[in-house]
Image (cartoon, rainbow, N blue to C red; front, side, top):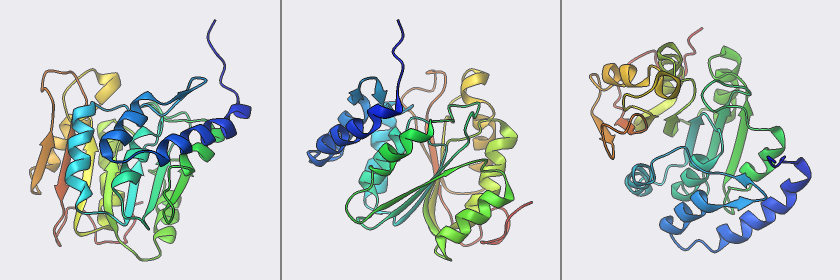
Length: 242
């Protein structure tokens, strides 16, 4: 019989998670925790190839981003790992669409677990709604308070139109020299990668880009990222496409 997850388990799961997180001495330990945590079937397993996200974290750690925006929270594993390489006083915003086709829709009672990812002086802000709506972009801008994003990780709506819209709306909020990253750049099943590989091919033609792929024949996954210059594709920073 399939176990039923219950909100009443959340406080105990948070305590168990925090105890293990406090004992993580390095990024490898944090990866072990993300991939192994299981409290009464409450998990945060990242939808990532471990070697790919590990390499990405290694490359981002030296940057110690202070403002991180993730589009697509899902199980929360990637958000947790991003918190480990972010600055000690970082703000991490994550937008997720309840019922989203590509892994979205974590139950509201898991929000406490996700907020517990924050280290002592960090803040994790969870926004539940459609990243494509102008109102959501306005909420993000208001929370940023004029501060640009250092790292934008796009892993939400995988349709070509969806990932393009996220890039058009949020990449202009990234500072010059900041990073915009995309997950699922490797061609694979339509219900897994959607139009992300197609969009990535177009996007990387306009900016200096890097790809982290374990195997181009793995049928999905893969992380692509680019360092944005002062003249990035799309509207000027702060403008919201409607």
